[in-house]
Amino acid sequence: MQLSASRVLLTGATGGMGRAIVAALCARRAQVLVVGRQDKALQALVERNPSQVSCLQADLRQPADRASVLRRAQQMGDINLLINAAGINHFGLFENMQEQAINDLIETNLTATLQLTHGLLPLLRSQPQSCVVNIGSTFGSIGYPGFSVYCATKFALRGFSEALRRELADTNVGVLYLAPRATRTEMNNAAVEAMNAELQVNMDSPELVAERLVQALDADLREVHLGFPERLFVRLNGILPRLVDKALRRQLPTIQHYATPSTHTREH
Image (cartoon, rainbow, N blue to C red; front, side):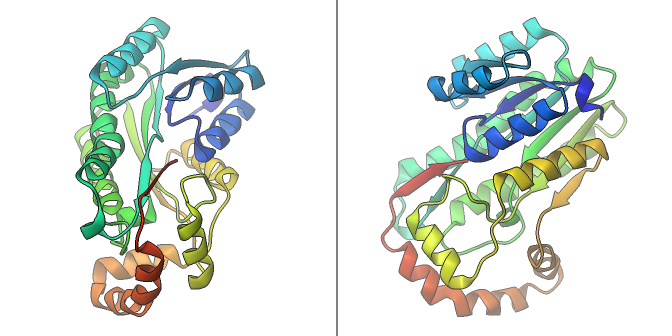
C-alpha cells in the first residue's frame, strides 16, 4: 500500500519498537495517530513530528479507553492502516507465575488487540485500500520455555491473523502478520539479555524491524518472519517438531537458571 497516502493508527507506540515504527512511517510521509499508556512519551513523539503525528493516551485493556480510540478514529474518518504493536512479555517458569500476570498478558496481547480490530473494521472496510498489521513473534510459531503465556498469546495472534485474512479475502482489507525474532527493546529484562548472550541468540534492532515492516507494506505481503536461522526453526517446528524439542532440551538448564525466579513483565 502507498504509505505516503496512509493514515495510521499505531498502538504500543511508546515502546522501543513502536518508536522505531513511528519514525519509519513518518519518513514515508504517513500521518500517524499514536496510542499508548504513557502520556509524556506520547507527547515526545508528537514533538518530533508535529505535522504528522497526533496522540491519544489510552489503556487498551479498558473498554472505555478502547471506545475513546474508536471515537477518535471515526472523527479522523479515513484511517486505512491499523498497526497492533501493543504488547507485554513475561520471562519466567509458568508454575511460578501469578494469576494476575497471566491475565495481563492475555488481556494486553490478545483480547485488547482483537477487540480494537473488531471495532475498527467497519472504518477500514470503508476505505479503498486498508490493512491490519499484527506484530507477532517467532514465539508465535515456536513454543519456548520461560515464555509459555507470551507464546500462547502470539500463537493465538498468528491464528487470528490467518483466519481474518481468509475471512476478508474478498474485501479491500489486507492482514499482515509480522513476526520479529529477539529484538533489543526495553521488553527484555537483564535476565533475558544475559540468557540470550549465553545462548548466542541473535537480536535485531527496533529500527530493522520497523524497516522490514514498511517494506512488507510496500510489497503487500501477508506474513513475514524475520531472521535466520529463526525462519528455518519455524519451518522445522512445523514439520519435525521433535528435532526442535531436542535442541531446546539442551538449552533447558540455561533457561531454567535465568528464569528462576522471575517476576519481570515488560512492554514492547
